[in-house]
Length: 70
Image (tube, rainbow, N blue to C red; front, side, top):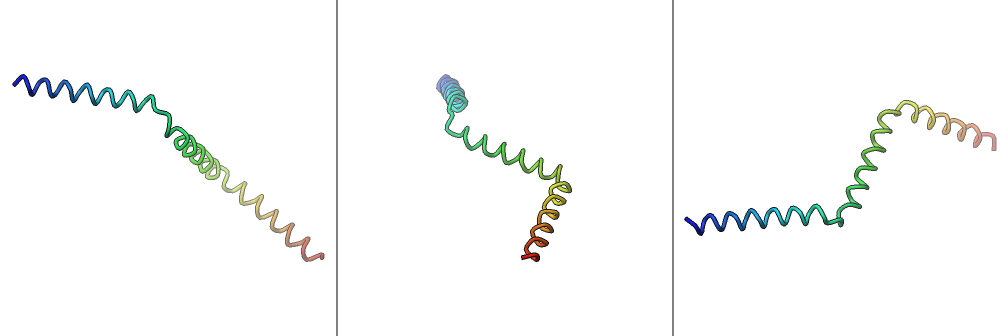
């Protein structure tokens, strides 16, 4: 019975230690930051979808009209 309790305590301590080390580790922070930037950009595109499409349409119409003049 004591062996089981000691084993549980060691496992719990090991898991807690591993979790603390995971929180201190900064290797994956660059990936998280890139993902957050992409999420923000996609959100902005979804919010301003109509305005963006209007701007792109006007740009392409200007490009088309100016190439026809050449």
